[in-house]
Length: 290
Image (spheres, rainbow, N blue to C red):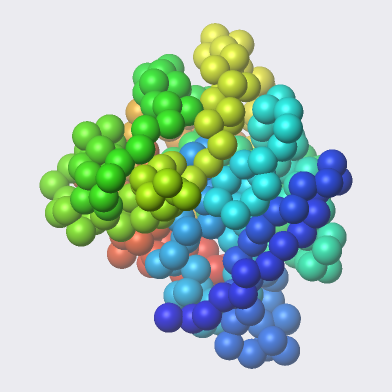
């Protein structure tokens, strides 16, 4: 496994934020390519890319940030800052610190929305995109499901208990998997607390702004998607997804000629990016990046 370095950057409002930096096999060679920026989902963290990032780091520099309130990044005092525009501002500060002029974004769910947000402000710096199971239009059922679990603050005595709890909540999205799969998922999502209980590795207050999201009055993100025209792009969708509909994906293809799509069987929201089909598609995308 390729090693990473735990590093930090500062947000403009003074938070100490954490990222994993996989430097690649040779700094000089990797420096000739854009960096890869892996952006996780709403309740996730940098560990979401534990399998994918080391593989990509065989050729590329890979950065996996913990967004504010997740993983090893600080929690803000005001939960109102848990919004995609703020996350994008935080990412811009990371890119500035690291001197990254061009990058490939791999965004899962919220990370995909962040990728589209970045496209509205720095389109020329985006060398390619992977959008994982999200689009400019979010589906009611998926939003309702997320609202049902985010910010609940459950805890468990062992990793097996934690795995079974996550399977109970998300088993429909990943049917037929073994206990080992769910333990791995638990170790990505959760952490050991100071009292010895296993807890979710995010600030429960991230739920507060999310609960105010109105599915019937969604912001118009189609211009953000269209800002990616001319760049290598890949959309991954789980066939069981309740957040990205086939109709929205078809409209994304219509508006962004040349985008590749991959639909994964027996997967819901969201693909883990460990699936062979996902890895192969991401590597095809990277082969198209100049």
